[in-house]
Amino acid sequence: MIVAGGGRPAGGESQEDMFVTSTAQSLGTASPQLEGDAIGLPEVLFQSITHMAPAVATALSIGAATSFAGGITPLAVLFAMVACLFTAYSIGQLAKHLPSAGGMYTYVGRGLGPIFGWLMAWAFALAEPLVAPILLAAFGFYGAAFLSTYLGIDVAYMWIVLAVACGLAVWWLVYSGISLSTRTGVVLGAIEIAIFVFISALLILNAGSRNTLSVFVPGDQGVQPAFQGMIFCLLAFIGFEAAAPLAEEAREPRRTIPRAVIWSTIFNYYAATVFFGPDRMKEFYTFNGGDPWGFMATEVLGTLGGLLVIFAILNSSLANANSGATAATRSVYSMGRSGLLPRWFAAIHPTRRTPVNAVHAQGLLAIVVAVAGGLILANDPFEGLGPINIYVFIGTLLGLLFASMYIAVNVAVIGFYLRERRDEFNVVKHLIIPVLGVIAMIPAFLSVIGGLTIPIVNLELAPFKGALSWTAPIAAVWMVIGIVVYFVLRARNPESLERIGDIFGGEAPPT
Image 1 (cartoon, rainbow, N blue to C red):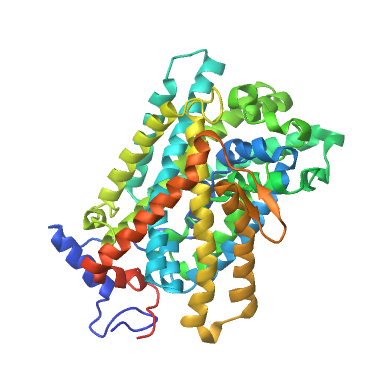
Image 2: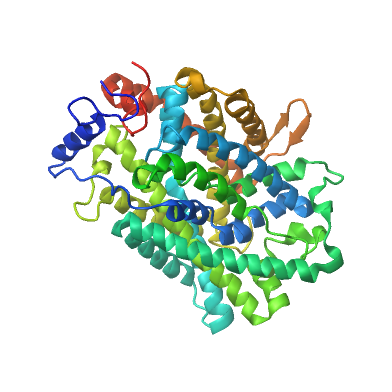
């Protein structure tokens, strides 16, 4: 029996330790574990910040929103930020008691029950490993643009070479150890934030009398454009919860994780479009060959401005791919450790103490998806943007999956505190805020499904066209498969599903 609070039986060895030992023995190795006490608040904070990728989010995620939200894109960003702030608070409330490499997977399992925890894990298993591939594609696109624009090197499919090179660099960073990969994130995150804050300030100053609060006010079409663009703005914020999977490797996780998650949402909400002009924002994403920010930076700072922006985007792509791969490998490792995925994924490198097989699998997947997706979707949904289209396609799928997961996490707060922490239950913290978090996420969720009408406000959302129309069906099929897999596991290996609540560290439910 596990003692609440410490997670250790009288013999001194936790069920988690015994399971990791048996897993390692089945793999024919010793029983190394993830490197504990390896990182503190700065690394955990920047794991979230670089996972959110301020520069890439500004250039690509929110950029894609402009094609739908137009001149009220800042309003769409505001909607997404508010929704994420509610969810960040909810995650912080759960992380107080459930620090775990399983992250949201553990939270929902403990708050709503094993089947919901499994579905969270299943959604995360598709979503998180796809973060790195889209960043490799972005690195390839902007790297090729840099060589062509500033060095005169224009080679067909150069983006593929650069995407593969970025993928290998990310693999090495994550393979080498948690300290190196996250501290690299601190440096890269600080650089990209500084550059875009500086450029954004110059754009605002140069906009002069064009600065206006009207970009936050719905126009003739109401809030529909903002809701449809919100999913891409939400994509810009994905990662504010990325610190959670590092809890087992952070000092004082119950204190650092909530602080890191909540504060990291602030850094990526604002990329002003006032300088470009609200009336022109529908053409923003494809402007200047897919590099509108480079154009604007050059306008206010000359060639140096364009160089700074493209450097920040390349830097951000590498940093975001690194942090995404770090979060993905830790969660896949946890699922393998608990038996919810093959135990092959639970292998730990004996000296580097990293989830070695999960790292290898993630690295290969990222490169293959980036290159194949960039070639297949070369002109869909945007003509001539090549690998950027795989960013938009997978980004839309990620937005839908994460919106669903954030809704589940908010509901899990209510369940967890009513079931396990009734003495701490607070109506505002553990009911009202989670409910508001659910409501705030609904427009983003429904916008991807499309062809629906939001009840009460009677607002119709048009369906996506072309390749983007496949994102919702793909997510639906994946989740249906997940339900089938759950019942297969429950029939063949029920012990693995029972571990969802206690195998990852945190207090076990009362027995």
